[in-house]
Amino acid sequence: MNTAVLEIAGLNRFFGGLPAVQNVTLKVEAGERRLLLGPNGAGKTTLFNLIAGDLKPSSGTISLFGRDVTKLRTDQRTQCGVARTYQIITLFAKQTLAHNVVLSLLGLRKRRWNPFADLGAETALWERAREVLALVGLGHAADRPVLETSYGERRRLEIAMALAQDPKILLLDEPLAGLSADERFEVQRLLERIPRDVTIVMIEHDMDVALAFADRITVLQRGQIVVEGTRAEVVADPKTREVYLGH
Ligand SMILES: Nc1ncnc2c1ncn2[C@@H]1O[C@H](COP(=O)(O)OP(=O)(O)OP(=O)(O)O)[C@@H](O)[C@H]1O
Image (cartoon, rainbow, N blue to C red; front, side, top):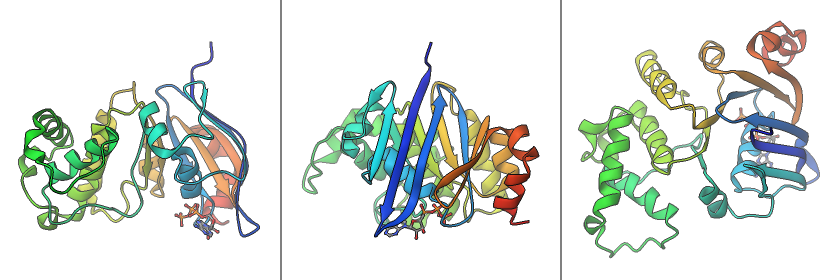
């Protein structure tokens, strides 16, 4: 039985003739924790953009849950169960944490955001927002403006916003980047608590964290997959050292 939730075949994306993602073929199984590793500019974020639908491929196909989504828009892919976080946090700083989660849920419902609408009336959304904030350890801060939170709390908020959408596959772009050791520990624990019915693909540079987390690792270089396998296989492969560690 085919249990792949994400299947990519012969995927290419060029920018002005230069390949950012080149002939990428990969399969991620249900429940898997997959890590994307690679030096700066390897094409990791471009690959995320292609999977989420933020970018269109130059050629190749992307399937989610057995359905070809290559031609679907981002919001249609979200409806299929994809959620992602971004390397650069994009939040409404003056609004509360709960308000930010509610806005992301409104986006999911494909309603146009109307700044004059009475958000307070959306009781179910506010309840859901508080529920996921509690899940990421931010229940106590739900009514605080984003401005008054730490960087680590914002990263957790971003994960909460993605989780609120009840995704079947979660794309995390460097969720630990820029965090202190304590904050990293908290986000790691949070990621461990995400149930296995959510498949996770994560870009992460911190090797220790990454290795503790991943079932399988894909190493990219100049847009191409150069190594793929279990943690042990990838660590043992001399190409990993060459590409990722540069020696
Ligand atoms: N919108 C764009 N226009 C032109 N070139 C782009 C664009 N987005 C990415 N690139 C180029 O594509 C290549 C891959 O970039 P990408 O951001 O996907 O790499 P990355 O592996 O995510 O790197 P990092 O670890 O630095 O985030 C780079 O050479 C980059 O300059």
